[in-house]
Image (cartoon, rainbow, N blue to C red; front, side, top):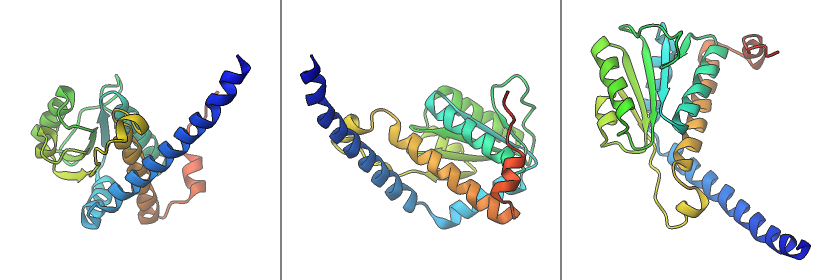
Length: 194
């Protein structure tokens, strides 16, 4: 069957190239549509908070964890909601919740607790009219289109996750500038793995 594998490679590579191009273009378009004022408010919220907590269900949780790690590296105090060592959220803290549809029960419940405790709630979602979005102190809505090719080239929440990760990295770059951090200062805070 060597001939079969050889014939499928060009098709797979073409699909790979179409997918990476499509994802890149859609993510860039969605992030470019964000309000600069809202992004500036998000940076300020994260920088001023005594502690920042992050949350996301499923694949959104992976993006939340990546943000928490980067916040620590930039010199801030960050926790992942749901971990056994996570302290209580207090007034003045910031909470970032990632949720594509903004309707997951755990995300909405978390948001309700955050609001009750008086912490700032930054919601990143693709649905600005969702329950989670309505609970937000600050909303960053990612305008992700549902084009016919999306299910094949970027299935499920791929566009949301890719856009959220790039959004998170952009926020970190802005925090680095605001806090006068460098790659070297971040590296000094990087976890040492054995």
